[in-house]
Image (cartoon, rainbow, N blue to C red; front, side, top):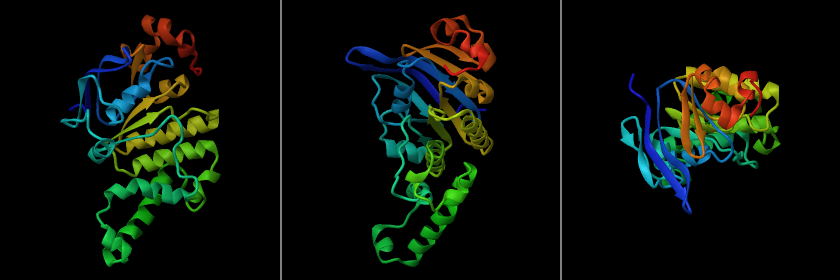
Length: 260
């Protein structure tokens, strides 16, 4: 099966310091692939390059046969890539459902005139968004919170809401950036089940995460970065026993499944 994402020689420097240096990897469709590494390894910068927040200094990234580097974020989203962020970015004064409807907006076709005058097409799309948003909330277990203010949700549920909003863009590939950060053990297990459901629903998952228990339990493949470079790639078991990984980052923690 053809790879959904092919990254070759991706490079980004800031003030002469290479945050990402000649990074190359491939992502097969319908898998969970984790990207791990110590703080400052270049993981989030990699996401920022893939989603159009930064322009690279070199390399390529081909998503479903199309080069995406240099495209603005809204074009990347339209092509089928969604992401979440390390810091939760929700609209706290809007309802949970309305937050997900924001993610659905780019899939609508009604113009300003039709919306302003409440023409039939606009009413049909609004009804569709109302119902469709509930399906994504159901996927992450938040359907009973739909009419609550997003800002009233516990932190763990706010992270799940951000995942639901990303899924509402109807992506083929979703990039999750440390979704387990700040979650307790129960919330992390629930998150793992949500990520599996996303994968089982036909969406490929690229997961940046520090929780090694989560990474090793749900990932089919793991990519390891250190100082902006790839130092290992393989199955969780292969990475777990790679001397370069143990030396650079994980030590005994990877074999104990603890947080790194």
